[in-house]
Image (cartoon, rainbow, N blue to C red; front, side, top):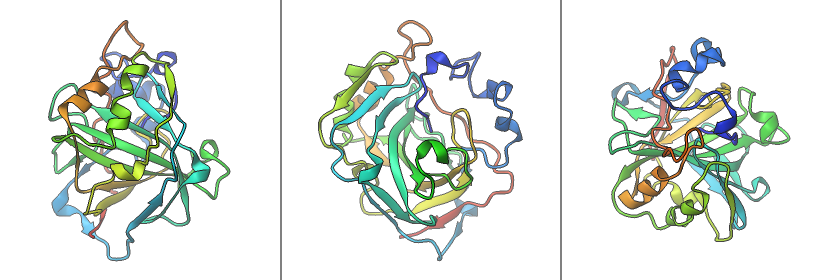
Length: 266
């Protein structure tokens, strides 16, 4: 899960000299933490929890949102006052403030979470903060501060709503560039159609500063993007090196350290 930092101003990244295996040099929590993300979800070991609720969300009109290239991903900034997320494993109400993605350089890799060892081609995150805190900045390092909806992505048919994002990625090709997205974009339409079953567990940001503040809600059913839509994400550049394509911007699964993953079945 990427935060709104420009990658060129940071020491960390996804290359051979600054990738996830090096992050503990600057962020000791990468190794010392007890709820780091992402993780593998071993389907046969997951417990179904009848106390969990369905997810309920509303993101409003979604007009005139800023979309930018952070150097680590594309990011769409939402209007928190116009939306809410409730239910699931959450206590209280959360508000969405950004959407971003992680993806690979080729099919079969790119998702941060894996299911029984299987990786997917990409993973999209909708990030929310707990309204018990004043804003997203105040919530970042709180144990219950954030909730992230995660959608696993496989290559398939074009996604009509994601195409609103895909069509404009060429306008934020370079790291640090940004535009105002004047078309209405409803993040709820990125959630799986029909089956909204999900896995949930206590975790962390998947990019530095790696705060252990995230309640993860990972949908069981993947969504589909077309090869062309995924390639448009791969065509973004990082800013770390001249014209270097932004690919393999994901953190590999980590030790669960005794955490249990629960499942809601719709």
